[in-house]
Amino acid sequence: MKAINLKEKFSLFDDYWSPKIIADLNSHQVKCAKFKGEFTWHQHDVDEMFLVVQGSLKLFVENQDKPVLINQGEMIVIPRKMRHCPVAENEAYVLIIEPNDVVNTGDVQNHHTIEKIPRI
Amino acid sequence: MKAINLKEKFSLFDDYWSPKIIADLNSHQVKCAKFKGEFTWHQHDVDEMFLVVQGSLKLFVENQDKPVLINQGEMIVIPRKMRHCPVAENEAYVLIIEPNDVVNTGDVQNHHTIEKIPRI
Image (tube, rainbow over all chains, first blue to last red; front, side):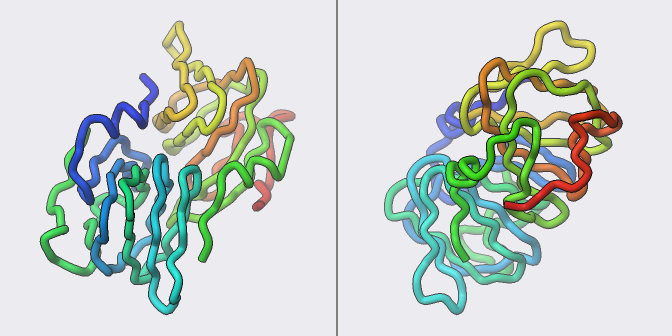
């Protein structure tokens, strides 16, 4: 058994909007992802947790004019079925915790969709 | 919707070994806890995640002479049924993610057992 160093994990990849599984937690997976630019409006049938490890992130959510700002050291749980779109003006490192086999683009299929999330 | 600031949450309490629920994530809860000193050897029937937000932590686990050191910015998933005992020589701030209604002392009942985990 060994601790998982988040900085080390984030140093292992450079691609944006491409989560990597770093641990399993019961029915959930813990993932690292780098965000930069604008993602895709989508929703999931399950809650999704974002914890910003470095940088900051704007989370646009349906029926809300202003995005939710999530700074380093802050987290949010995006409730199931809430349509959302993350935007990172500058690079952000995000820890994601969500149920196994969640598709990153939820109910949407496009160039951001990743069929099989790799483990690092 | 608003981001949850971890530092702010940790500023709301001072008691050690006394987790507070800060968010719900599907079947799981996200908790903040301050560790200092030695806890209690115990086990859970489910996996438990620790992320060290400040300070460091030694996790003693069964059948392993040396503890696992978990520094700030590091995390671990303690597998279900693995007997363990966290020790923090100095104060440590820990984010815990585990299934709803997990008892903090697992299969052991003693002065550390908290019957109802409060929300902050």
